Each structure stands twice: as C-alpha cells, then as structure tokens.
Image (cartoon, rainbow, N blue to C red; front, side, top):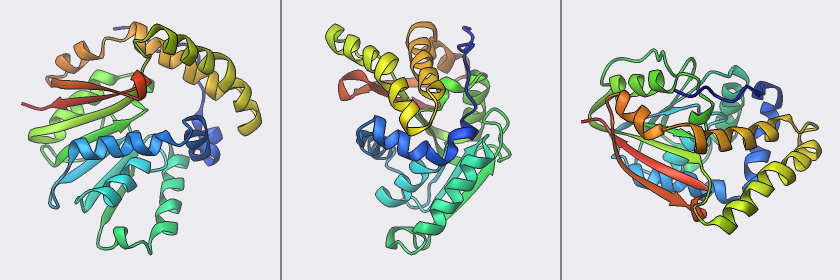
Length: 237
C-alpha cells in the first residue's frame, strides 16, 4: 500500500479558521456535497450515524438538519476540532432541527473506536480519509461497528476526468490556494498539503482495493461537480 505524502501539516494549528477555509475555497459548494452524502444515506429515525474525521462537525449537523436521524456521533483525533464542534453545537442549540437530538463527540483514533460491535447503521467520512495513515484499519473498524447491511459513505476530493477541467483544477490547487492560504491562514502550508494529498490520493491510492481488503463491498462511485469530489457508497454484506 502506498504511503501518504511526506509533507504533513498539523491542522490543530488552524482549527479556528478551518470552517472559513472550507466554505471560502469551495465557494460554498461544500454544503451541497455534504447534503448529497446525507441524501445518499437517508437514515431512518431510529438509525444511528457515526461520522469519522468529523472536524468541526459539519456532517454531524447536516445529518440532524437534513435527515430523520436523531442520534449522531462525531469522532476526530484532533481535540481542538472537537472543541470547536462542541462550541458550534452550543450556538445552534436553539435551532428547531436540533431539538430532541443526541450528539456524542469522541476524541479518538478512527482505527480504534470505543464503540460496541454492530452498534451503528452508517459510518461516514468527508474529506478526511485521504489523511488517514491506517485506512484499512479504519475501514475494518467501520465493518466491525456496522450492523448487517450497514453502509459506509465517503466524500473525498478527486481529479476530474475531463482534461481541461483537470488542468484548471490542478492550477487552482497548486498556485491559487496556497497564495490565498497566506491571506486567510497566514501560512501556505495547509493548502499546499491539501494539493499534494489530493494528487497522491488520486494517483497512488487504490481505494477500491483497500475497501475489499477490509471486507467491505463498493456499491458505486458518484462524481460530483465535474469530478472535483467523489461520493463512495460502500456496503457491509
């Protein structure tokens, strides 16, 4: 299995500006991408969702706002990210769509999750799995935690198949985003890492093989926004 890029950035350092970056550099389309993930899952009221690499909780809140789900768990290895997710929950506490809903926040390793076997119906991950060193371990944990016929849904950046769009997107990632990162974050490092990690994910990682190695089955891949993002739908048999 290919190693992740050697360039790494500690996103704890920019956690406070994390949401602003997501929305700014995706031109707000990231909200729609997450809603597509939620729509693909379409959980029933009693079904439980576990979101891995949850960051500041955008997918967690999207499930509670745009689906019937009443119990969502968000897990991230970064304590500053989880703290920001809790703060966001406090700000949203009076929202009608958050009433009578349960959120559990966990600071832990996605490859060693402190939950019981067959305890969740959906495991999700948005824009985090390419940064996980032990992806097979994470997927194996997902398989352990899922009930029979449960599903894993992964949103991840990808490179468009259209040659012109791919070239434009690569230029945006490699040149425009690092410059903008200096303005928004005060450092180009995080967005330079983003560019490198997307290229590595697309060219060096065989995620389909990793899914099979973890004992899961790929149902379908759905390109979004011209292939800038891909939604992976995976099932536990």
